[in-house]
Image (cartoon, rainbow, N blue to C red):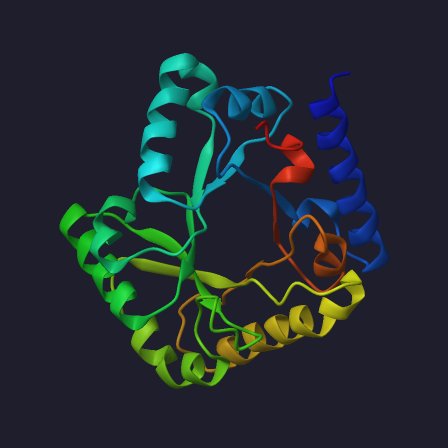
Length: 237
C-alpha cells in the first residue's frame, strides 16, 4: 500500500470512529480533498485510491487543473466532483456558477446575486453553502451570524441557487477540543435557519473541520470535512 493510500484509509478510519462516538452513520460524513497547490497528477493518484470530491480555492488554478486532469485520464476525471471552497470575487461568479458540484463559500448578498444572475443566464442551478465567520476574524471571509439571519429571506429568494447548508473556518486553536464550541454554534445556526421556513427544502449540510480538528467537527455534526495535507502529504518544495 502506498503512503497516500495509507493516509486515505487512516482518515476514513478516524472519520468512522468519530461518527460512531456521536452515534452517527460514517457514510453521513464525506471527505473533501483540498487540492490547492496540488498537481493534476497528485489529484489522479488520490482519485485512484477512491477519492471523488476535490476542493479548489482559486478559480484560475481550478479551471486549468480540471482541464489537465481531464486530458490525462478522461475516464477517471469523468467521475470526479469539483467543489469551490475559497473566497470567490463577485466579478468571477460567472466562471463558477453552475460549474461545480458544491460552492462552499458564498459570503455576501452581492456575490449571491451575481451567482443567481449567472445561473439564470446559463439555465443552471448551483448548489451552495453560506459561509459564516464564527470567530469575527477580520482576516477571514464569511457572514456574521446575525447578518445572515437578517438577510436570510433575501438569499432564499434568489433563483438558480439551491442552498444546502453552512460552511465555516473557525479560529485555529489548540487543542482541537477548543474549537468544539464553534462547530456546535454552526450546527445551532443551521437549525435556526431551517426554523425560519424560508427554504422549500431544509438545509442539511455542514462543511466544517480540517486536518487538525475534523474529528471534533464530525462529533458536532459535520457532513463535509475539508482535508489537504493530511491526505496528500507534505507539499514538495
